[in-house]
Image 1 (cartoon, rainbow, N blue to C red):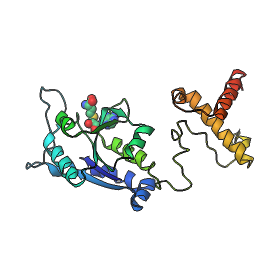
Image 2 (spheres, protein in one colour):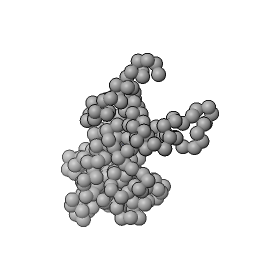
Image 3 (tube, rainbow, N blue to C red):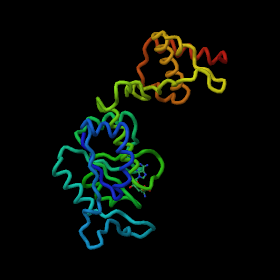
Image 4 (tube, rainbow, N blue to C red):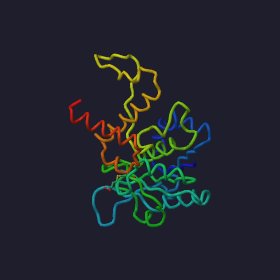
Length: 247
Ligand code: SAH
């Protein structure tokens, strides 16, 4: 998968994209990331990328011409890639959006700064618009990193055999069960006995039940979108009974 990122701050990406899973996915050539400095596409002497908004008000707006030239040059080489804007107005990034994005051959991600980009860039080029949530970031770079990271994890082969995207939260529509590692007793809190039993079937069932419990408690909205098995319904009944009896 090809990621082209358009930004005024290419240096921001050097840490997050040079470590761990993203680095490994690049080394395995599962993904290819190119950073493009929008300023390189400004044609005036001062390499201007922003200007005052029409109609007045505080702040600056990212100019259309450098962005347009940059997008068109990348699109000419990769016509199949999808142009994705980052903005608080976009659709919220979640597991199913990330999964959907893995189907594209490439993403051209535009990182805004200041008050945002000239609206005509949206009209002319935007094929998708993604938001991290209902808050305002200082720029689209962190959103672009979140998109690249969440999409890459879902590309087959990106995670090692000991890691799994399916059992991760949202992979099967539920939040993941709780994890424990040594020591068995930490500050008086012990590890659930089933996990120490070595009985794989009991452990599987315990994890499923705790996954259902966590989802029911923290994100009940997710449960309505999951196809529950007979076992799931039985486990949920047990959870309800345990809660009713104050266990
Ligand atoms: N003035 C705009 C916010 C601009 S913030 C408004 O009020 O709607 C500058 C840039 O940061 C945006 O162009 C976008 O690229 C990025 N950004 C800000 N919040 C974001 C969010 N929640 N999700 C994704 N990108 C965001």
